[in-house]
Image 1 (cartoon, helix red, strand yellow):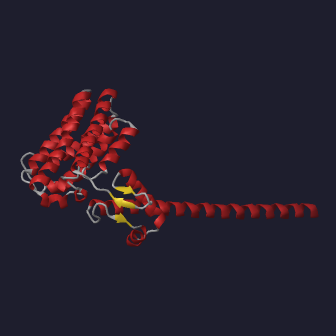
Image 2 (tube, rainbow, N blue to C red):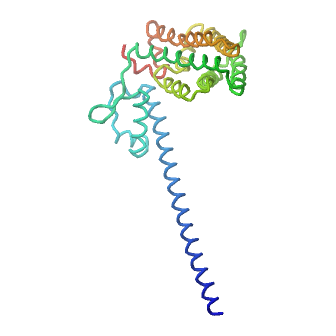
Image 3 (tube, rainbow, N blue to C red):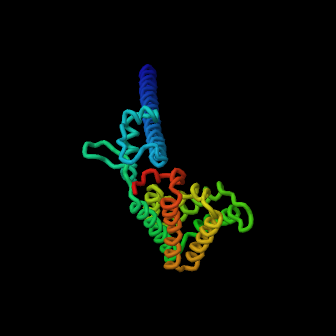
Length: 276
């Protein structure tokens, strides 16, 4: 009997030890996961904040970005800030100098025009592949829904809902990035959209201040529908050409603003980085 009691005691002691061990291990893993999530969240906040500050013109081109000052300004540690700055280097908004520091990039008119052109090429490629390979029905359903809402935002004989148009236009172009089903193309379309003025929504705020901008938005919506119609009809070359032509609306807006309405440059995110 004594042997049995001792065996039970030892068993309970061992079980208690392992329960405490695994409890401590679980707490440690949980804490590390929370630390990692917090670092990721800080990096994301730093990335969005820094990108917004650069595109809004808060930093002039060729301004050197000082980590200590930025860290204090954004209220984050320097490690997630470095991660955010590296991401912006890869996006092309800032450049790394020989000494390891970073500065805001300077963009020429040709740089911005090339970015707009490249967006048209990439979106066109996405549409052409979707037409040739067959687009996923779920994506097409989402696009049809967005197009229907866009029609309501830009009615032919009534005032438009500009705020709705801006949001829906961004959703439409995000779906264009996905329509081919290619992760490579989707990633590259999103990357090019982060360049100054290459986003399909870049000129919308300025367009609101231009004459006959309602007509230009209705033309853009007609092009939206034509692109998707070409995909459904398996007309790859036509879909690609329409996408490239659609992107050239941004080129026309850029040329108009820089030549005739330079005062509207402040309404276009990223145009402050332009050095003609």
